[in-house]
Each structure stands twice: as structure tokens, then as C-alpha cells.
Amino acid sequence: SLRSIHVGGALTDCDLFEQAFSALPETSFTHVYGSTEAEPVAQIDAKKAVNESRRAGFFQTLVLGKPIPEVEYQNHESSLWVSGAHVCPRYLGSEIDNQISKRVDSKGRCWHKMGDRIKISDSGAFWFQGRSQQNLEDFQLEQAIYCTLGQSSAFIHRDKKNSIWLLGDSVVSKERLIRKNHPDVHHIEDLSIFRDRRHRSRIDRSTTIQKGAPWLTG
Image 1 (tube, rainbow, N blue to C red):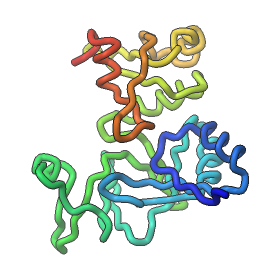
Image 2: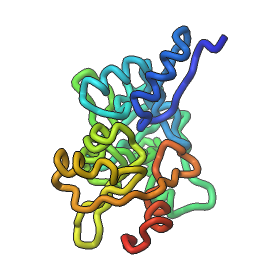
Image 3: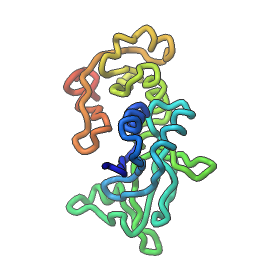
């Protein structure tokens, strides 16, 4: 009897969505983009999002849809900023976070820094291009590696010498294929992936390294 499902955020593997579509053919799926501080920001029919992401060659569902009318946005090179009646105006008890992620303009509107790099297509749709702290080249390399692996429980890490490591679940078993398709990868290591406690789709990179490869910290 389930008729509607809203799934938040980017980084859902396309094939996971497709399994859900197959299991629940009568159910509509909406792909919603937002954050704890501002949700929703954009949305799209999930089947359309998967189809467009597949056509663009991505393993994950990276198209986020068009922004909802209630949200104003400013898209800067490093991060999307949003404003609106349902955008949390400030953090309580954390002035450092307020200084980093909040600002008030000359009209008194509060803007929130999403911390996501966004590309806007000609049609006006948002495409996720990684978190602000990860450079675009590394994000694109990860997405290409996911296609090679056929799974996304992995990530790349640059050490102090700027050498690229691929870390993740059962990545060594595909070492030959990875080195053939992605010659920029210098080292490959199997590690158990730890997830962010709040956002289960997001890999907790620092914890994964600290628990599995502490020599790579710093």
C-alpha cells in the first residue's frame, strides 16, 4: 500500500534506486536535496534523476532537480548558499559555525552555506559535484572509480606527498582493472568503511583512515 517515498540527498547508488523501483513498481519516488539546516532546497522525480545520472555516466544519482520556489540561492564556485523562510537562521551555542556557514545581507535575509559544490545545467537543474572541502578532480576520479568497481564503498585519499590512495571494501581484488582504467591511483588498500553517524550515505573518511590506516593521517 506504500504509494510515495521521499529520499534525501545525493550519493544514492543508481542501482540501489533501481532495485527499489523494481520492488515497488506502483510507488512514486521523489529525490529531495537539502540539509539539516535547509530542507527541501531542490527536488526531482527519482526515476528521472537516475536516468539522467546514468546518461551522464555516473554510478551515483547526482542530479538534484530544480530548486523549489520558496528558496533563493547564490551559487558560488566553492559552495551553494540558500535563503528562505524555512532556512535555519543560526546555530545555537556555536558561534564558530555561524561565522562559517551563516551570513545576513543588506536586506536582513539570512543565508546558509550548504557546503556542496553545485553545477547548474542549462535547464536549471542542480547537479551535485562533491563537498566543498574535496577538490573537483578528486570527486570526478572517485565517480569514475565507482563505475569500475561496481560499488561505492570506497574513496580516494591524498597523502602528504600528494600521492593518491584508493581505500575501501574489496578494492584490492580489482587492482589490475583499477590501474588500467585509472593510472593516477598510486596505492590501493582494503579498509572497512565507516559511515557518518548522521548521514549514513556519506563515508566518514577520517574515521575510516584512523581505524584502518592511521599512518595516512595528517
